[in-house]
Length: 420
Image (cartoon, rainbow, N blue to C red; front, side, top):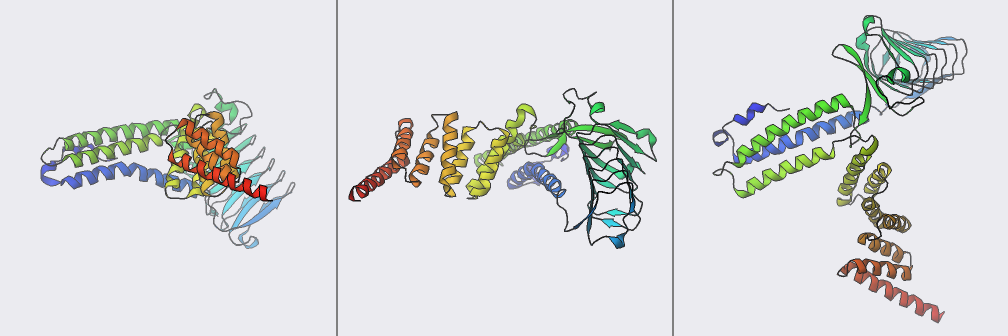
């Protein structure tokens, strides 16, 4: 965030009027760029380098050490369906990632000097599991497990632990036992009344914040970026402070009658409005009733792709918008237009029909329905659709010309039938 005292600069002497406008533009885009960087980093977490999966499965009461000479190049270690086993990744062994699936009463040790290049360990559907790590783990994901024990040699080895559907879990640190924590659904229900037994969807993230182990529920912003209520509140507070300073700067600039003409002032106002709209689109969570915020964000992404004629990608965004909030006739109508552009007339017709069920007076949906029917040589139904459009919008030139075309084609088809 920029330093507020910058508002006190004597603009008349030091900065030109175009520099004022450029500065507002830079301030307006800085937060968006920051968000884009965060989004990119989040997407990169799921990107795994080219690797070869090494399975160790169906073992019972075995002790296994994964020596580097026994592993393929760039190995992803996948422990699967093992029982009462002890696994060790020794000093000098490098893995891309560690996956632990359906392993019961097993112990996995990541020795000091071993390496996980993606710094990622994923555990799911495992009971009575103990994971001992003497190395840094950037992301530890634990899903649908019971009675899990996680032990770090040092507190600094934990970056973030994400859990969902974990019944009971203990987290301990050899060097700082005062940070030890009990977690899992039973414990989390004490501070999250809406968390139900058997909930495998709600996610919680555990990190060391200000010297303490903190577990928080993950929420997602309208743009699907994951965060927590605490972080969101801090972010909004920072944004308000920045907006206040930006507005103060803009007002000071707007009052410089001898430096800014009306066009300059209008440009500044437009940039401020654009910034406010951008931040509003990125605000809000998708939990509960706020799914509509996510749907609106996706709708706007679809509109942007449509404008540059990326119709397939626009359809994808509209589909994701409808998944978040299905009862939106405008999005259905927009996706119908995408299908028309992609020559998928059956899907265009289906979306137009779905739109009209929600809003029978949606003019564009009647027109697009008519186009879809016309392209399928259903001339009578097409004429009816165009007529419905004209009843709602008598001056619609496209509907008039399209109905004339449908009538002409229908007449030609009838004459052909008579000749046959």
